Amino acid sequence: MDKVKLSTIWLAGCSGCHMSFLDLDEWLFEVAKFADIVYSPVGSDIKEYPEGVDVCLVEGAVANEENRELLYKARARTKFLVSFGDCAVTANVPAMRNMLGGAEPVLKRCYLELGDETRKLPHEPGIVPELLDRVSPIHELVQVDLFIPGCPPPAPRIQAAIEPLLKGEQPLMEGREMLKFG
Image 1 (cartoon, one colour):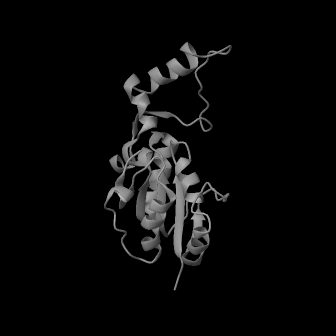
Image 2: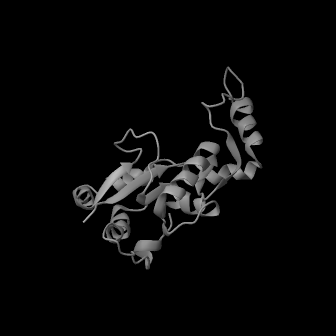
């Protein structure tokens, strides 16, 4: 049996979902029996999202051009895309900046009004990704195959969701243990 090609990506969020993934502890050895992690910000230095990924866990909301580009690439190259955690599912805390009405007011508030000694807007093409006017949950931009809510999702929920996927089966996402937000 071929191993599942598993990836994880981190967009605009705190990395708590990835930390919760690492809380799978010993069960990660089971993951290694069924999957090769082909792309991840955790324990990997692969720069380009690969082709032919079977399952991708997407943490975080889409807040800048770099997030959007990586999400589009992941969707195009992945068979089964998972919205992983409340930021990916609802845009959660990163979307709080939407209340300011666009990228420009956010930048002005952060760098000019609240700036310390060097009040200057950041702009370094190719280095600082351009903010989008609105932070979005991933399902507003691409098709999502599974939603795993939680901030972060607890390790047992992550295991219950991905274990069937590693065996080519659909997880059962019902009940408070699997669907609770926050």
